[in-house]
Length: 229
Image (cartoon, rainbow, N blue to C red; front, top):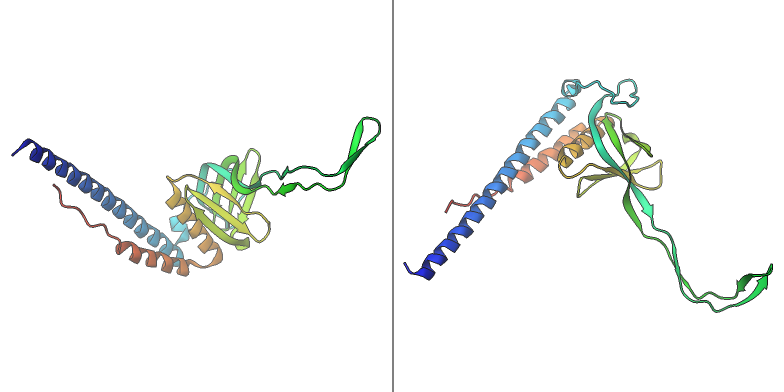
């Protein structure tokens, strides 16, 4: 085998090895998600058939005041409080009026402005850090500057965003706000929020059907393993 043919063969082998490694990682991730879906469905099915307290045996209140019949579903440490923050309004432009002195050195301008007022853009910003508790009726946050409660029966919407963020829209307040908890625990946290909401609103059967549909979709996306080089 010549020098260039040998180099070409080594390059092809390296590509095949990289493809096999990528394929194995994709399959491992698929299997991990498949197992997680199985666990989620088991938990939801148990809750739907009256076994909620067998799944959630933790009676710790984690410093929050729990009401009668309320129990914790997830406790989150080191979470960020996120809310809509509006940037200051900006003014730009010239002036085309006249002026005259009043009270000695102070001058008052009159006439037209011709300038432009630009409303500040809104964005979701981190405004506090603290801990949160998800229960069967609500989500509570306590930080050094903010304290907030989101009741599921007063919630219009719940949006899970990339980066491990959930934003809540409520019927009782104008601006959406939410929690940031990072990518690592995102799947688990979001499942527990959805589960708690379904328990609070009596929609466990519908949530179970949604998970079953997700399981069918997931099964159709089974990665095809690459043959080893």
